[in-house]
Length: 296
Image (tube, rainbow, N blue to C red; front, side, top):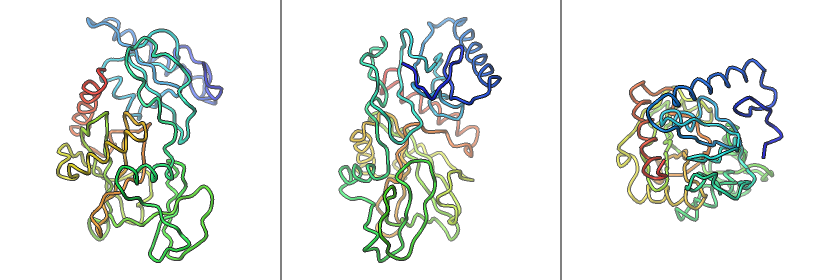
């Protein structure tokens, strides 16, 4: 079963419109990896990452490579590990009724909606409180942004307004750490554990921008999140059927609570602004958590 928005490569399927030369380069890289692993002492391990072939920046690309998997998005044959990986806020249900011989659950197979309105509903269920407000009754600054992920279109409003379809209206979280910076917590949840988080810093005026000029790896999660907060985040992942996710979390300086503003099931990382040592440690942590939680 192939997606119509993807075109044929030799070993994988790539997005339509990708130049032929780029497809050939990607297939050559795949072939080199295959020979390298096939010539090793250990048995070859195969991973299906479907339907989208992950970019090199994709966390699953790095995890699979680091763990020695040959991976493809062609659903043919037997696989040792399977991941539902689609760059979309809304996804159709996992289309296959078998595990391709992996003997393991399909990672994120039941994750079909990570929109911001659904996220807030599920956060309210897990945390006992939410983030969304009624803009017609707003008396303090609030944020308007699309329900769709990865648009980075948040805007701050100071006056009440009528709600529009396709947008959420949320409390403005005061996540300032000084006079010119705000901090996000990028919290990694894998199964029932949080192996680490990233502290991500942006200028206040750039709080809704996707890229960040500064990031720090935080291995000791207890320094940033209480045990009940960690339990709530793991519960939220479970409620949203996210076996592996990265949550964008803000802590409000006023009420001291944490708020989840984004759920990601096709994350890119570790963040590029980490040091080389931090990136290496983060990737080791991610792979270890995959082994422990999913027997990868």
